[in-house]
Image (cartoon, rainbow, N blue to C red; front, side, top):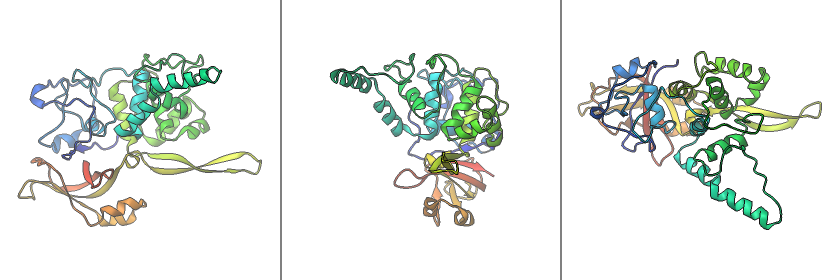
Length: 340
């Protein structure tokens, strides 16, 4: 697995759907799985998020919760050892590329009311509306907007009988295939033999998960996939043309990483730790050589600035690091730091 992240959040918290609790009110019941979290334990902020079933979050989990990709349940637990249903997977996959605001958009666009109105419009015109979604995904279900979005964007075709089976557990291979398609690798999957062999080949190149199997995927395994996907480049169609045989060919381009697409630029630099600062604040200084060599225009806006963490973290130490800088608002804030 790739290097773990030590997450530190600014005053403007970047998670809204996850239930967070104070550490003293939690039990440290760690399920039987391991994350690459050595750095987290060495550089733990004073204030960390926690859930009822996990007093200390592995760094990979902490980052994904703060970025709104995964969330806890209504009972305050994270349940990382729980199997994921296909309906849950559709929503989690949507949030790989989109934030809460976009989530509201998809929920409204594909709401039950919109489909009922569309059906009525067809009836008023004297025709019958033919629903182009899955036969077993009801318009009123909470997962319908996300499942329908996945179908429209060719992330999943469901089963041959026209169903999606949203309440069934999703397997690791199925979840991996949907993730790879979500970030633009559909044509590569097909070029390598299609599902499931092509999915496995692409995973070996991207490094999303170790040894995926045809077994029910747990939330812990999803964390591994989604966390590693943050540094993977999204592939998009950049245009089309006719080849020498008169067939249309699509031109693909590596657009930007998943984290950059979501508004978090990963920047190398130096952390001035609390051991160097009298007021115990943490300051990050970007590496100017890294900024000069970066191909993305908006990263130039970061040049010449220092970034102060909004809260005091007495255990953070100085060192070379990479940070995820949030560029979505009117000003930049630091979302997470990764020690080199």
